[in-house]
Each structure stands twice: as C-alpha cells, then as structure tokens.
Image (tube, rainbow, N blue to C red; front, side, top):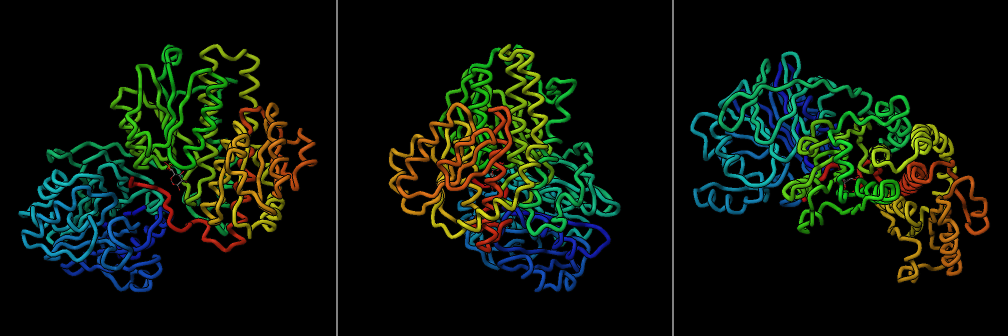
Length: 608
Ligand code: G6P
C-alpha cells in the first residue's frame, strides 16, 4: 500500500525520491508524486499510473531542483487513482505539502469543518484534510501545528510534511502506519521501509506511535507529543543491498522462491544449539507453557495459511487446542480469551492493519502475544510480548514465498520447543525431529532442481478456467496456499478443498478436463485422498498428484505425478508447497501476467 520517502541533504532530492519510490513499488500503488522545496517555494509533480509516468514527466527528477523533498506512491482508498488524488497534497496557500500513508477515519467531519471555514478541496482524499489542518493550526511553529493536527485526526497515519517557511528542515510522524528514519552523512531520510533507503544508509531509527521527527541535513531530532526530545537508539540493518534487487532474475518472485533454502536455514540455524531448540528471543517459561489453556493463531493471507498448518502441528505434538482465525474476523468477534491463553500472531510485514488490530483486541482481553514477524521493529513486533523473527530478508514480490516458508519453520520450532517442555516427546523423537528440521533447506533445494517439470505441467494447464486443490489435514492446509498462489498471480479461478468435503457440493463443478491438484503426502490419509482422486477422475477431472517418493501407487490414479522427498510427516508442508509455488509462477508467466505486482493487490495491507 502507500509508500513514503523523504530526503534532506546536499544532493538533488527528486531523483533520490524517485529511486526510493521505485523500491516501494512492490507495496502496491496506482499513482505517485513528489514535492520538493526549491527556490523558496514547494514544487509538486504527480501522475496517475506507474512511476515511470512521473519519471518521464520530470526527466527522472532532473527538472526539479532542490535538496529537500517528500515522495509518495498511492494505493487508492478514498477517491479513484488520478493526478488530483495523488499525493503530495498542498494546503490552500501552498505553504504545506503532505504525504500520508494510512486512513483518517474522521476526515468527513474535518472536511466539513474546514469547508465551513473557507478551505477549498480539490481532491476526494482523506489526506487533503491534513494539509489544510496544518494551515489552519499553523501559528508560526510547525511542531505546534503538528501536535494539534495529530490530536485532531483519528485513524492511522505516517506523514511527511514540507513547509515553505522551513527551508532547512522537514517533519514527519507516524501512528499505526510504518515510517523509519534513515541516518546518513550530511543527509537524512524517512521511508515506509528500509528497502527505499538501503542504497544510502543502513543506520536507522524506528519511530514509536506519535513520535515526531524533525530532519535537517546534519541532524535528526525526535520528539514526543509534549515537545520533549526523545533519545533514540540507532539500529544498523544487516540486509544486503542486493537482497532488494532482482539480481538477474526476471521476477522477484522466482528469486525469492530460490532463496528459500537459505531463508529457512537462516531462520532455524541460530535457534538450534547442540541438538536443542533455543528460543532466546522469548520470555515464555516452561511453567507458562504448561499452563497454556488454548492457543489462537491470528493472521491474514498466506500467514493465515501458515496458521492452519500450525493448528495441525501444535495440536498433534503438544495436545493443546489451537484455533486459527483470519485477523479481520477475529478483531470483531469479541473473542473468548481466558487466562493463560496464548495468541500467536503471524505477519511478514508486521504492519498489516487487521492483524495489528486483532493483536490489540487480544491484548485488551488479557492475552499474551507471541508474534512471528519478518520486519524488525515493525508495529506488530513492537506491540507483542514476545517476537520470533523470521530471517527471510526483504520480500518484494506481492505473492509471498520465502516469508511463508520461514514462518512455517518457526511454527515447527515453537511446536517442538513446547512439546519437549510438556514432556510430549521422548529424547529420541525430539532429536529426530530437530535433525529433520535441519534437513529441510537441502530438501527444498532438491525440489528446486526440478523446476522444469513444473514448467512443463504449467504449459499443459495455463489455459484452464478453473483449478481445484484438494488434500486432507496438513495437505489441506498446503492446498489453501497452493490455490492462493495460483489465483493471485495468474487470475485463474481456484479453490482449495478438504478432500473429503468435495462431494458435499463442490464436486458438481468438476467437468471434463477440469484440473484437480491432489496433495497426498501424509502416510495415514494417503488412501483416503486416493479415493477422492478416483471420485473426481470418474467425473472427468484431470489430476495432478503431489506426493512423496514413498507413495508409488499415485501413478496408478493420477494423470501426472509430482514427487517430493520424504520427511517427517509434520514437516511435509515445507516441501509440498514448493512445487505449488513453481506451478503458480509458471502458469502466470505463460499467461503474461505481471507476476511481482498482480492487479488490485498490495504487499502490505495497511488499511482494514
Ligand atoms: C497481503 C500479501 C500476502 C500476505 C498478507 C498478510 O495480502 O499479498 O502475501 O500473506 O498480506 O501480510 P503480512 O505482512 O501480515 O504477512
């Protein structure tokens, strides 16, 4: 969703802003704009559509001079994508320029008040009220105006604000929307995430809610709402610049698929010491674990699908009841949370609005929060009692792959850690499980060697109108992700179904030639799923079976068979998902889809 970059320094700002915005494109957007302080006034350029339209308009930023500015990529919420609705928005006198990520929930009331006072609006956005509010409250001190603005608005915001009375500084603030500060040599930055500024600096400040920052080229000061300076700790990001570059790949998605062995290894290795799982990052004691009454797993999208795997794995290994819920439902369902219930929140970005709100709802009910997050210092990480970071590195493609895989790896670590503390595993079982987790990266790498097989299968089916995924238990959990991967990037209708449930309605959709991807990796339920394969075959379906090397008789029933290596039953999802990611990717590629930026989707969903 919307992305923000701000720069102040000695270099020409506009090209730096455009380049920073290009690194935020992955978040999803439909218009873009920049405002630069130049020659005692604020110059603005904005354009509907892709960033290259804005780049062309400004000759890659070269036509706009000035060394301080703010930039924005907008994912439309209030008002259609258009030049007028694109940010930055300017106050009536032209004194203030504002970029905003988030939603101002009381903007209608504010707009009415400002209109009554004579302010004229030219856009349909909620953001424009902020520009006018600055003007309205400004009495010569921008910080005082900012404090009054943030006291007046309700909702979420990350703001970057230029004021033409301040030629040497600009200000920014955030609440429930991401914004970090980048610290350079004679230059400083703000950005929605580190990828936008990684090329210039790795030293950053994370901002807490309602912390306001004043950036000059040679200083950065952070203040609270009482205008008191807040001391900030500097963090150094260890992400490599190349981690956020395509590095010769046609798409980030394929690069990230290929990065999975490393990402899984980076996530598990530091947490396995001398054959034991060590979760130094969490404060949950053995006593706490023994007292857990129930676990909720709450997340959105693919992270929710990790939760579905988590339910099966934790219930099987720890015998603790687990309920998985999508965050947008959980936040409004008045959840029944009792003493000693644990809520596990899963999020790659750490900023998904519904997930964050669900976390807060759980906290209000007294729950303890353990989160699994990829972005260090993100809102969800900050709001949790305990955080286990996935070390996937930056994930740019909208369709997640390596974040999903590392989240799964963390679920396995948590399940085994708790099961051992609960005495549910013998020392032999525990050791075996750990060595099987450690073997996962190599097994994923092995599957990736046979990419061509999936490319071939994609070439057979990329014209399908509808594709079904079926499986039981863990295979069902992975079906959900396989189906989502396919539909989000290839726009082919797809559904995932618990294999045994198919005949309660959905089987009526199977006709001659319908592709059914049947996942049957687990030993216990293999024969059951094979029966379901026979049912759909009898109704004309073409079946692609995905199973382990042990199951030889899949070939007897399925038209095509994809084999994955053997592994501990609980860990199979880490392997099963790989061919499904590849299949989705190649289908979308053959259809000529915009794989990294599928239509209508955003990487970070910062609105509910
Ligand atoms: C978006 C992304 C998905 C992701 C979901 C949750 O829909 O496209 O890939 O799974 O948000 O995001 P999170 O950052 O909370 O994991």
